[in-house]
Structure formats: C-alpha cells, structure tokens
Length: 281
Ligand SMILES: [Zn+2]
Image 1 (cartoon, rainbow, N blue to C red):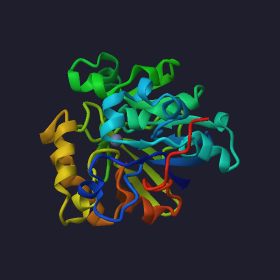
Image 2 (image 1 turned 180 degrees about the vertical axis):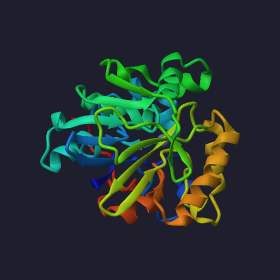
Image 3 (image 1 turned 90 degrees about the vertical axis):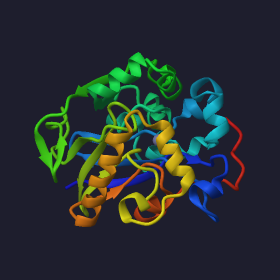
C-alpha cells in the first residue's frame, strides 16, 4: 500500500463561476497525486507547469485563458509543491497521465527525465490532433522536450469489473491505468492502492461529484462535458460504472476538477480566485 499526497496544481476560475461550481466557491482545482513508491516518486496528472504559468498565451492559447481563466501561480505547480515537501524534481521518476489535455499535461515538462505513462490511444490522438477540437486541447509545446513515453493498450486484467492494463512498466502493481474512454479517445483513470484503500483518480471522466454520488450536476458542467467529449456514449456508460464503484465502497472515486472532492482528501487548496494572481517571476 502506497502513501499519497493530494496536490491542487492550478485553480481554474472559469467564466461564470457561479454557474459552474456554485456560489461561495474558490474555483475548480487541478487534482494531482504524488505517490511515494520504491521506484521513486510517481506523479499522477501534472496540472499546469511553470512554463504554462510564465507564458500562458503561447503554451495554453487565448481561448483557454479567456474561458477557463487559470490563476497563474507558479507556487501551485507540481514541481514547486514537490520541492516544498522536501524533494527535488529529479526524485519524480514517473508520471502517469489520465490524458494529454493541456490542463493535465503541462506540468510534465518540469520533470524532463521522468517516464510518462499513458494509453496508446491517447498518445496517438494527441500526436495526430486530427480534428479541430483536438488541435485546441493538445498543445505540442508541452511535450517539446521529447518525454520518454511508455504506452499501453487495454488488456484483460480486471479491476473491480473495469478492464485495466497489465502492470505499468517499472511501477509497483498498486498503480493501475484503468481506461475510461470518452472525454478523449484514450482517456483513463489511475487507480492507486493507498494506505487508506483503493483510490481512483477518474481524471475528466466527469466534472462534478453529483455524477457519482447522485444529485444535480450544474447545467454549465453538463454542457462542458458534452463540448469536450470525443465519444458521448462511452463517457456516459463510464459515468454509470463509476457511480456503481463509488457506491460499492470498493474504491474512493474522485475526478480532476471538483473542489469539494479535493477538500475532502486534502486541506491544501491553492489560492481562491478572489485573490489576485501573483506577477510572473
Ligand atoms: Zn481537465
């Protein structure tokens, strides 16, 4: 069983935040995990990185900055949080990504020597970027350092009824890639057997906790899910299965951007949207 730190690697203030996360909320989070293993530190999702914060237009594009409104704070990037925990960037030997969207992949360039584990389908989708939507969401500058990718196809291994890939190369069997296609062509969750039981980082398989807990998902988030989907049917089927898993109690399920799910797992939120972004260094 592995020890996990929950990191919030960017605050997304979004247009019309009241519609998206409700009143009195600090903004959406970019939920990443830092896992301590015998193979070194493993980062699960990378959020925005220092290069994104310093050059947001070039790295993220005008549209993302205008609509999603990330609070550009270098102190919140994964590498700076890793350093505050007493480690160095070189201690992060592996990065496991739910997908290669710009708000999940940006931080990997701060760990240029880490192996990056992702599904083969996601890697192919990002490298080809064959549709208009994919040309907007995938940003080649974020992997211009030629990361050492490890790519996986779905295999027959089962994890609580989900297909999982065979063991990730060089990583302990307590970390699994669990394909959850739909949001992107090769999107996956990442399961980690922690000291508190199994946890599933479901990435962007859903945007709001009510999807797996029951209750009302804000309309703006339901529309956003639809806008970003590459396969609506697959995404909706996975949401049903994730809800069943969450209710079963076999694993703690959380997504990348829900601030309430993050707060239940860690008190260390980034600064709220109301506070000004620090000036770039
Ligand atoms: Zn995302």
